[in-house]
Amino acid sequence: MIEIILLVSSVLFIFALKLFGRPSTAHRANTFAMLAMALAVFSAFNFDFSKYDSAFYITIVVSGLLGVLISKRVQMTQMPELVGLFNGFGGGASGAIAYVELSGSSLPISDVFVAIFSMGIGMFTFSGSLVAVMKLRGKLNNFNKKLADIFSVFFPTILVIPAVLEMDDLLMEFIILVAIISGVIRVAVIGGADMPVVIAFLNSLSGIAAMSAGFIVNSIILIVAGALVGASGIILTLLMCAAMNRTLRDVLKGGFGTTTINNEYEKDPISTSPEDVAIQLSYAESVVIVPGYGMAVAQAQAAVKELTNTLKDKNIEVKFAIHPVAGRMPGHMNVLLAEVDIDYEDMYTLEDINSEFSSTDVVIVVGANDVVNPLARTDEDSPIYGMPILDVDLAKQVIVLKRSMSPGYAGIANPLFVNDNAKMLFADAKEGLENIIKSFELV
Image (cartoon, rainbow, N blue to C red; front, top):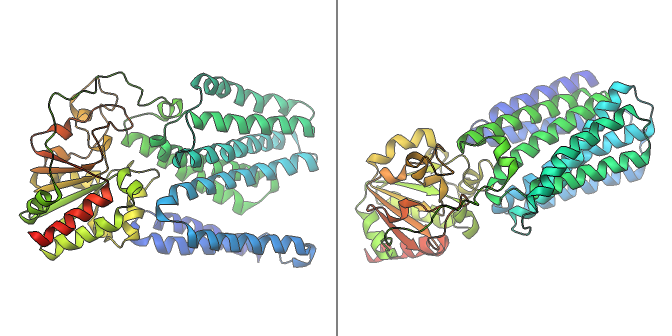
């Protein structure tokens, strides 16, 4: 019976992962994944519920209640931090399993290698994820990059050498300490705008750590689930790196955005007002909205929805162009837009929407910068050259909602802002959109 339960759980995990491929089926995917996890947890009891004391069951109940409480209270804008915490706790749990197995039983030398690997990767993921969460919240400045480089070499060496030595608690604790410090320093040097890639990478590491722990304790479902997370996480990581035309090594090195390129503009931008934008939109037949991290910071998704409804009421076609690395986690913009019931059918990927910009009447850029910078196509000396971007500059008119002319994370000027077909609405994204909506009453 346990083997059947594990088989059903494994199939549900795989099926859920498939359904996560489309926003329209993602909710159903979550249901299948939760059922698979419930079966996996149940199988661990092996139908013998009497061997655990009351403290164990209290822990299970309290943990479940905490999960419900967090899910009820967390805001959609905080979802990247929550995902980072999930990665960290998953890695930490795997590291704890490896620690218990190493300290409590005599393992063959092959399992010792696997256990050390799981413990080191798990604790690295744990500390690195916590740092990623703090960086997403803007609570941590970059560490000295040289320290990170030293620990990048030191860390794998520490993991290999002790495997041929007699294992004791002190040595294991030393490995854990090095892994934790390495995770902190490695992630701390990476800029906040690269956190989508880092989160996906740490997600992959948490899966690898879980898979390794599964081999140690002979848990089939832990191996299957860990392998799925590890494989899908690294695929997503590489896809996001490709979306930025950068390698994973470049991301992990950090320092992106420290360019010394001259960021002065040759001319002043054309400023506009909410009233002028409302008039311009009233004469449009097609509008594309490009959300960016500025929308998330301002929590302007509700205002975006209201503007969308206003435009659709006037029979104006509205679409959303989503860049794969916009925001602070994979799918961040999709999540925020879904929160306010933007239709999935209105969200378009870079590949699907780029060919339509040249025939679009008005593009509204809400808090995006580097992902719409035409230098990626034209300037071979630019640090973002070759990065796939949303070709909004090809539209007939572009409205950019931004607080100032400050550069994006790449640290370079964006010539889109001074294009002849572009106008700047200098305002907080939420406030600017709300003023545009109010101005429609005067049009």
